Length: 230
Image (cartoon, rainbow, N blue to C red; front, top):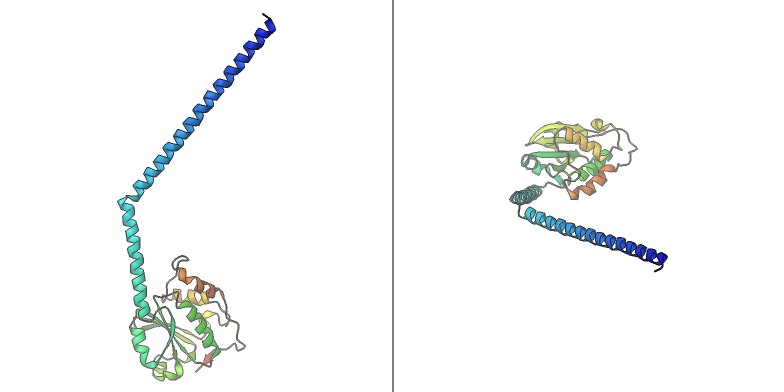
């Protein structure tokens, strides 16, 4: 027999054994990976089932639903009392409006005064965002008794009420920098500091998005730099 032929045959056999061994190892690795993946998927399914049946998780979910329902009911009750919008009232309604709620903001205004119109725009923007507080306006010309009783001398005059008691006020724009082009957010911060409204979280109410946009806007400056008076 040709020695070279024998050597070539043995070499081919050895190479074939190596390929076969490699193929077996590869097959084992593939099977092991599939088994591991199947086991992991099974564990995930078991974990999800356990979470769905977790009494603590169910309680948290139920508590959250109850809290949301309670908040919605509270909001509806306040809206029935006139909260959530900026409304005009008459002198005859004034006492009932400010004593019938915990917090109220009343703007004494004059329909011809430019700065009163500026204040109107900002308060109208804030009212839907701060439903816990009532926002109302009263024509000073048609409310002589309360104008005198509350000592309203300069307009706009925004009086803050807590349980029917006047606790503070904004006279003209002196507390807002004395300029006409202030942002709604500036007024909002002042009212928060005075405790008549509360700071809102960014994600607290989806319906507040429009108010956020309005708060970033400013009202164009008036040509008259002085406050109006009655």
